[in-house]
Amino acid sequence: MRIFPNTKWMGHQLIFFKDIDSSNDTAKSFIQLGKNLSCGSVIIANKQNKGRGRFQRIWHSPASVNLYFSILIKPELDQKNWPQMTFPMSLGILEATQKYSKDVHLKWPNDILVQGKKICGILLELEKDWVIVGVGYNVNQKEFQAGLHLPATSLFLETGKQIDRFRILLEILQHIEKWYEYFCKHGFESIREIWIEKSHLLQRGIVLTDGRHVTVTGLNDDGSLCYMGEDYKKGALYSSDEICSWL
Ligand code: BTN
Image (tube, rainbow, N blue to C red):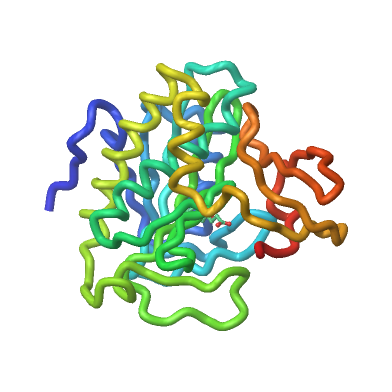
């Protein structure tokens, strides 16, 4: 089977591995070794032995059921804007997922939820002048272990159908290319409201880890979450581990 996305540049170099520790780590070592990589190359693992999530959480990566991949992008953007890249990436994945479910939302800063359950997580890492966009997407997994950070789901559990992993991969790459190009051309401001509209964010109450109850009011220019406290004081959150729970 020939796998090639219908894109301008994204995913034109697809590198498959049967069994690796982590596609993000493989991407990092390729960059360190100075391998000849084009912008938009994708490293795909059939299985990961040490799949990593954010905050050093384990990303369980059983063989042959889900998608585990890392996109290598050499941004032509000011480095201060690199962390914002998570927003066009998640918008692309959301759009690809909407073909399979109507109830898809974004969870700040980089999760995709279907019916309120996590179907995909993104781990953005920097290495030299590259951004590595690691994506774990649950496609055909039928059961998830108890005690996960968030309840999880898969396309199979949502649709009752086995989905071809490579088909959804190519769809995701197409949508990501579109949103990434839009973001590069028009800036974060151009996608901020679209992202917020697709998110679970606005006017939600949250409890912070320091016990305060606050209300989310939007996203700041740097992608941080802005909130208003009960005392009407404004503040910003830079990491979801500052959030104890969503109300
Ligand atoms: C998260 O939700 O915490 C992010 C999960 C990211 C998992 C993906 S799977 C492919 C890539 N390789 C890794 O080790 N992690 C990311």
